[in-house]
Image (cartoon, rainbow, N blue to C red; front, side):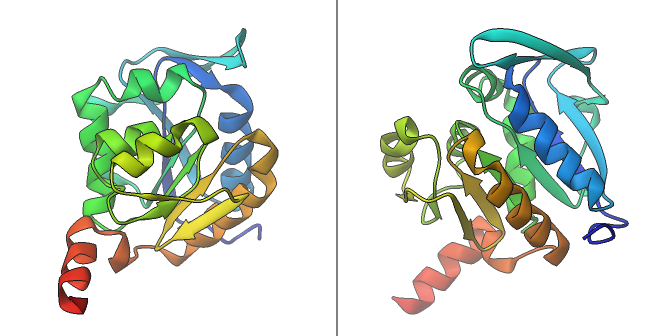
Length: 199
């Protein structure tokens, strides 16, 4: 597994405050251990403040502001959770557009816990099946997704999990999907075209 992601560059996108620390640090370590180059992106340069639930934890240096980045520069995207993190992130149009660009290119994306809130804002969950922190299930259904209560779920390059307890399974599937590269079925347009053909 040490060389699985050699040559791959992965973006981790967070808000500047409110990240669930373990949902940042453990996936980042798994990606780096698999050989990936990982960059931490946020709406503003400087630092990103993580939390252990509601308690302030460590802060992490931001490698690049999202306005200075392009999805074309990365092979995959990882979105940590924490309640405040994705809720803040979805108020930044440039962050939402960055997320959408990965789906438009069919590139693999991994999102855990509350992170699918940002996917909803990017309008990329319609017709998809995913899991999340349980309180998001109505939001996801209203956005056109099918919600499942599973440790980890993979849908055409989109990897989702519910909570920190799922991180081992989440990290393993994330590395696997990121190694596979782009999935045509992860493109919103491609998905709708397939549905139209079936109809």
